[in-house]
Image (cartoon, rainbow, N blue to C red; front, side, top):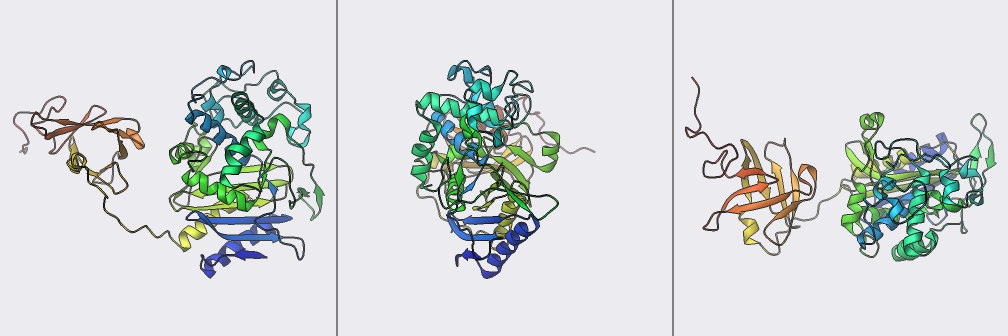
Length: 461
């Protein structure tokens, strides 16, 4: 009951099948489907089901719940990249009169706006969206639970506001904008706001008996941007490739990487577990690797999408039960199985296509005080600074075109690296955010802050 590709070794394929078989059996799921992506293409699809003679494949739709939020976030970041808005803008600037307008767009994306986790009763996931026709119905009379910006508190109404933002700025329904700007360019033809055959039915499995009951599949109305979508493992596998690498037709690789970065202060328990939240992406440190993705659930359905960018492996797991298999954990396990059984083979080393002499002059060993650093020019461009001892601050830098460089990550993200030259044009030292890096430790020929003792280095008896 599984379809495989020959790109993975037989032992790896069997380990993947075993993992989803255990998940479906122990989780008592009516069905469970999974896909694995490596190096930008699907390499394995698997399925387990309780229905004899029938195995859902990568084209069968399941409801994906809160993975929908990641699609909504991409639409918002597109608006930012177009210059239509800034993530620091308060919502009120673009969608006035909500009663929650002080919250910024970035806070809504990262669930740090202090908004309630759910909309007012009745339970929105099992009731028609027509009960909440306006944003005021979604937010209720008291939309806030915490001070704005102080803590991470997951909020479904917050993503309803982001959907309203997209509609207000684009002048079109969220679903229409989604289809035009994400689904069609990425070829996600089996992703939709409403189920399209073939699709799975949602079930509740009795916690104390092997019995089932169908769950309602409500149109969420205003709450759609938080959890409406139906999709397949095939489509979500392609979406995972996009979330790993970007696609200039939708969102650049740089903006996608921004989604991967922690954007919310983690709770104490999350910090201990190595978990945080970016811009509509969960971030988890597990099995020695950093994973990004999102989980989803609605009555009758569970969904998980997990990516290891470093390994270039992603997995999607979908199931049609309200509770049972831990699909996000299963997806993470599928990533681990492939990454460990078949480690990524690095690309062949390639030299620079063209050498920038002014940049080459900066390469080599530098000292910040007495700590030794190396500055390299990799073939993919930019500069890479790192401590030679393995302990200390490192960063990648991109050229600004004027002889300076801007930090891209780590402690020096956004900081300016400026080579300071002597009258004869040679490099005296590097100024990195006011830190002076010299060719020798405390080089007396460089303007070291605080000066250099005139007696120089000495021993002590």
